[in-house]
Length: 543
Length: 87
Image 1 (cartoon, one colour):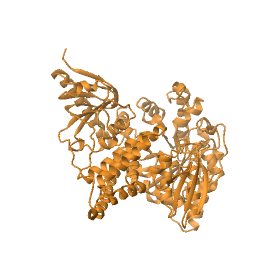
Image 2 (cartoon, chains in turn orange, brown; image 1 turned 60 degrees about the horizontal axis):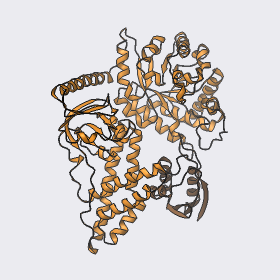
Image 3 (spheres, chains in turn orange, red; image 1 turned 30 degrees about the vertical axis):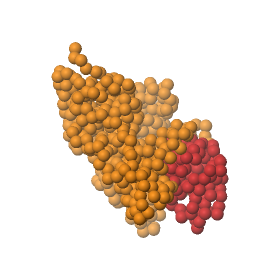
Image 4 (cartoon, chains in turn yellow, brown; image 1 turned 90 degrees about the vertical axis):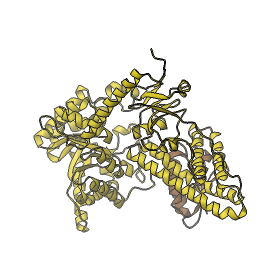
């Protein structure tokens, strides 16, 4: 048996890597000068502002890169760092010290440290953790002031496996592209910053290996398997070749999936299945297209309404819908009208406390009762329609009474807009089938709509009477239950009779085991989170 | 000058996303705005200062605004603190 060290940890980011070792040791940044002269003050203040600008710009670019890679929460970290770098109080404290003849690099490190100490002393765990963030930002500004270029991760010039106790988000972000083959990290879990970033950059990672990392620091070569969650220090020849073979197989699979990104999904017997993306904002459209989305099967509009003091205006909504419509051009974009209930507050809407918001005043029920909520949204959709291929979908519909009322309001909006001389476009109307009632009586509803989209997440919850968030009910949270499958079957049958199409936009649409079953039942559109698209297309093409 | 009292509603307290939104909203006004908690003041346009207040869910704070748009500023910021955060 070879004499090597095996490190077991958490499989944090898929993939296999073998390469030379780079050990990252976090450095203490020391100011080059402590003080400056009276004459230098203005010049140094200017340099400080420039350094802040440069750092903020770089942080904002990283945020953008992460957002494109689908890492919304990590993008948020960098946006918070931008905010810190540009903080007005932080600036005035640094400037005051510089006016007191302290060098800007010394001042920025000192002020950063003051805030870090304040945060570290706080009871709140979240705030205490912000100490590292503010230190990180201050260090970056100081480094920029001293001309950057310190040896470290940013100077990595040979593709390597990076070993570290931990990596701060900014550490990970400044590694030159292609230079990190993999990460082996002593701390952390699957949800640590480093893990999430590794996944969004596609770099294999094993984290949480703990103390044994020490034994690997002296190694020349490390092999790691981020799918299985282990690493081997100084592997022998046969281990290296085994890893290389795994690597090739994975690369082949990735390349194969790459091919599927931009093909039209079709089964072997020629049935066309549209594979679309679920998006939550217009800015996600570009990313979805890159993954090969053939449309948007579900545009959730809730984000437009949340976390703000007033309801969004019609114009604001118009801009968002138009942006998505234009990005997709001919390809369909299905906009789901507002779907919220008593579990989420809406500005300006009097929502009573409810015992059971998921069975309460929500979705289309609320929209029908509050025209000032519903009409601006429908008007915005109608106005955006000429810019692409928009469809409108009503959530939580139970029967034709609701559907007809909603269609009536849509018609009113169209007539109003025409009277006002606004340009409008035609939009197909469909419903989310997510209540058992709508599925059971799909045959009544089908003649009055252009499509059905099955929201499996809620359909499962309502059919099996099992809360989506309850950890003890996992068996009852799958679409692969005869009762749920029967309802999907009923919906498809009714659609076939009426000559309309059926899509699925819940989690099930992207699940490899569910895709064949859904298609078998008659579903012709699958809408899922964008990164799942290539795999779904391949599954479809193998049926 | 206007002063308004508010109770911090977001479960997370005045940090992370609620703080970021709060600062963003504050920056949209010309008035000088401070948040006061237990006698300590913080510039409402500085997320760092705000976070050092450590205002938690259920804490009582005062928002003081001074300037041409002080009424609107105080009102908008009280509204943010009074709202439950999404998820």
